[in-house]
Length: 358
Image 1: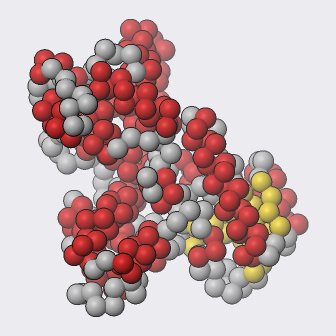
Image 2 (image 1 turned 135 degrees about the vertical axis):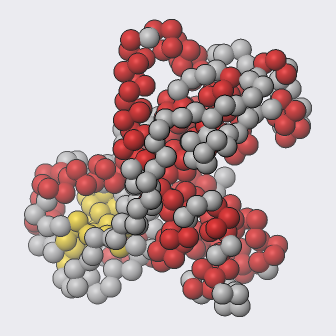
């Protein structure tokens, strides 16, 4: 249940791992640390396959258009989202997700597999359903996890939800009949596998002067960012995405308010909730800021929205990147195990594990 807080960096990965290693040796904590690093892996992989995000967005729009023309498909998707398919386990998970904003990782995989291979619904719509309702919804881990289940992340490799596996790991809470679920999972093929690219270099900070710090839901721990000698004249709070479900909007609103309060105390400056790009431009002008600075924005909707405002600002938007991302992301080149093997060395670089083996 730490996931929503780590995803929005109300607490940081580095903070969590440091706390764990103060109480446990690495051997005891290794599996937990790996789980923390999974989101880092997905983000790093996404950054190195940047064409997959616009491809997913285009596929989602195509699927939404299809729903307008195919009322039968629209009805099936609506029933799945309501938890009204007749599949007891799937329906319970759909309702739990909508009610709580959370699903256990196993349930997420089973749900995605049933959506794709049993119900034969478009994977992009399922990914969007998760993204809209999960408190920890993350463009990278959500999009790529759905692609992995569908056989689009690792070519030809799919994830099949099996009745015996569900019965075992739910302690027989759910025992689907063998003929209720798809007996096999044939990998989808959307012809878009992602072309590897270099990780984008953060937009550099000015060397000195005053800035406006732009607080977004991607990173809500501004007091631990390295801004060098820059002075923060004002904090501007970027508005949340209003397409998300009401519980997600409520969580993000409260999280942003908490981060804004801490930022005001840490930087000893005023805080304003931004209502438009013109409003942000006015704040930058009034502050005589040399730049609008934010934590490095990973690929996703928040980055898209922020960058769409850039041309209206009187100053450039600059970014500061956390060492955690800078050290880990380059290792997300292929599968997770390539990054996993580098965890001790990276933790050593971050001074989290001085005795780590290089």
